[in-house]
Image (cartoon, rainbow, N blue to C red; front, side, top):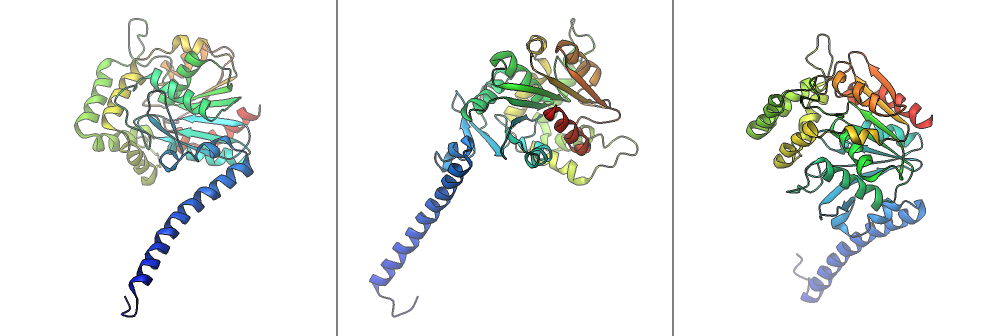
Length: 326
């Protein structure tokens, strides 16, 4: 500081710095407000309710649910798999936003940037959070797309909330109708398989997620070429989920019976699955779901793994675009 600087000058400088900080913050909000007015995007308007709620909505139990909202046009929503977050859909969202669609994806409660709620970590809670996103953003004629656990979320949403805001649905590598082996579902996976997942998450989830990524993307198959980046992103996204939330979600995706939900589908539906899915076997999921959904369109990719939205991104994107435009 210059010896010539007086107390009055120092005081004036401090006020200016503080004022600049405030103005900068207001400026960002003002720019966002201007964009909201120009675009007419309800989501953008909603995002101006204070810095604490930027890109979030509040569910009925007070949990903050993070979402991202890109583009303009017909609406497509995305529900992600376990234990990931909305970023797992970036390849599809970016593509479809460039094709004239408005794409919205949220982080499931307890996952990614959403609040790590102590309760509501079940399919009813997940479906109600999806409903909160759809209703808060006032989305209509939306196509609901769900991958894996997200497919169960979409099914339970339709089962609980109907299709008044829904135009179409897509289930990709989805868990319905029921993963668990029961007397009524003898082809399902034994409870011990899901107990092993719980043990992995509870004991050393970081290593468990690294190992799971290999099966998720089929990197263990002869001749498979999966980049280290694809495997790393799975671990990174998974580690953002709360341990309690990820643990409780296992019961939700494995033991929930979606049979009655699927029977309530009354919109055009695409069922898409990889035939070499080592996480959600196709015979006990997609093929059964398609029989329960009236008029469902079935598409199966030979040799494709569970994480086909990444390994077969271009194929999946083309399939989605054709279905959306049909």
